[in-house]
Image (cartoon, one colour):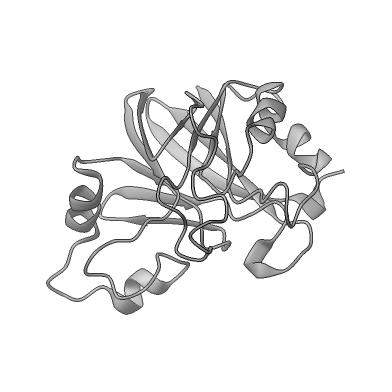
Length: 196
């Protein structure tokens, strides 16, 4: 069994001054932490790395929601950060990106939008494979600030939300735990306000 902590959109410095202390409690015992972007500065990853090894994705050309000159390259030169991450863990192929912009889907991938905006001739499997260039079992992403765990076309899609600006509100938000076992995979959103 493998426990993976998922986090995104920490916005430090900026909206948040530090990673909420509840994150360390939730990620305690994790084998790996995946940060799905909007990191801004390497000390965020350094802090998470005190808990477990960290891999991250960052916007290389800037985020659609940011001005072009504002932190347009996240953590330049940091080997933990790539525009896309691909992992094979416990027999599952995992792809991670900050902005999951599926060409052909006329909306962001958010809770409930796939059923509403996916046309009958489209397949989430095909759209995802086209975006990443390979078939995947699990997709981890961020940017929208809305937490989500949904399965489409056999692919588990997980957005952990943001620990500090969920749904664009400045308050305690969420992270996620991805658990991988040979016979099953599951992801759970953890609301940090519920953590002692």
